[in-house]
Image (cartoon, rainbow over all chains, first blue to last red; front, side, top):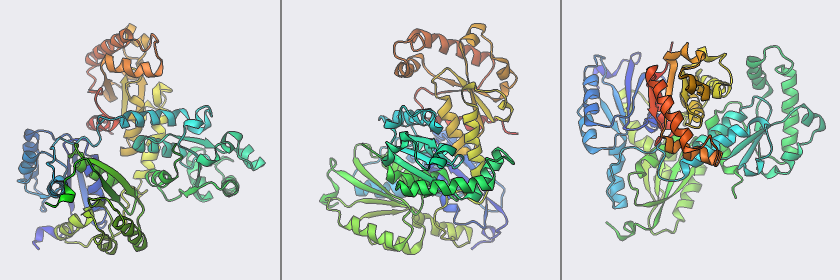
Length: 275
Length: 275
């Protein structure tokens, strides 16, 4: 082990390099480096590196780096020549395509096409249009604005106001092309202790978000400080009433208090009402 | 090369396995397999595989597979024991963590923590709250609803109606925590050939979406068939007038006709107006 590698207080430069959006390489790189939480990293993403010239320029930049430690490079460059050039940079290189394409070619008995990255492109199929239509659907069916299109919904999220229904619907639409509507339960529903008719008729597509009263109170305070709506008392009341409605109607739920929209959305996926 | 590997018409099973959301492993797996476009794959994502028991169950399922060809497994499992168990499955295994964590440990001279995946978690920092606040900002500042908060915008997208401003803003917010507003240019702006004052005052944050008249016509026809609004003539007029406005005001632009929101968003990132 040489000395340069040992100083843990130093911020190590990390490059994410892609011939396309860089979304994949950022995701895998962050995932790997999240295993080294005591270290500090400085992230630099270089997207659309799609010519030998651009690779050459970035190698120069990297080679001019005067940090003690060599940078890390995570790359999803596909083109063989560009990868070869990048491999000459004075850095530790994690060539995600190179590492896996050769064994894949052998297993699949087929040459990789070396087409530049199109994972996040519009693609040749209907999936992209479908995702965009789902985003429009989520916007149109947000917050119970209308119940006209609920029959087209793959899932209808319910839960107290500010529990994260809207961003979850948008994520389900954008990432997975899921048609997700959401419907807020309101005072009247709690008093009658009965789901609105529009929901009762579609109880098999309902999915409930559960959140602790304390967290709900925190979130609402940011929006309307010192209001009745944000009070811990009101939050406790709503959370407890909603819990009863969920149980009585056997609605599947997800506890969202500590979870991101990505986590909530992926936990909803198995519950989709697909034709 | 054994016979089982050679039939190109067969749909090969592909498993994406994650102890968390599976978003990273899906992205990398699709990216790699998009290099083999003439082959057919059947994708199965197994998320939240976070116990030895679950790994054991999935190994059983895989081993019961009666396809001629062994399935491919892409895994981002972090835990060493789970990875070891998975490696016993009768499949071709691409262990994304195993492949890179050991060299990273050496380079960084630090043990990986083996914490289960939290790439898409809420995380300990402010970034998650920031992203969600940005989503709310995008919703609140969509389609020129209000110009009150434009000073908080990192970027203001402009372009003809239905050119993709809204989903792009939402993606910028959700993925990168960018505060993105959007403002539609309307008939009056084209007639006066002048940007509205609210935009002129913030010309350094404007970013223009460009689209071909033909594609705009197609998209608008889906929404309002046979309308004046959707007519090719109207689309040509708007596209040409907007092009002039972009040039006169030296507004950076992106051609969106063939691009996904992910591509448009990542091409906008270098243009953010950050304090």
